[in-house]
Length: 103
View 1 (cartoon, rainbow, N blue to C red):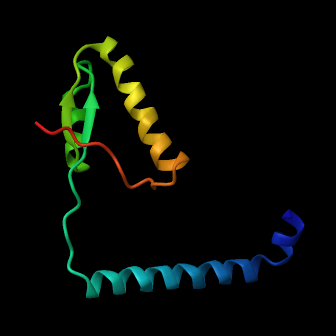
View 2 (cartoon, helix red, strand yellow):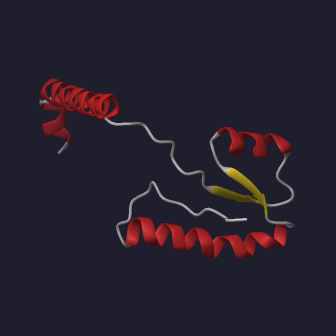
């Protein structure tokens, strides 16, 4: 496989550039002709030892920061993450999903 890729590296690179161009064109056209809607804001659970810099970074990434309490609360967050991975990859719902805590 590596010999084939090395022998045809110029063609592979050209094909990759063409596919990237089509994806860029498709994405730009989609943004141009559709009405942009803001994505829903997901929740990110942090434990109490998370510094304020970490919480600020999570907020800047567009998530709602939820303080889950002390370090032993991380044990309760792990099954939620495992469920998210199982739904996204195992059941094919995709990776652009998450949970939101309703207050």
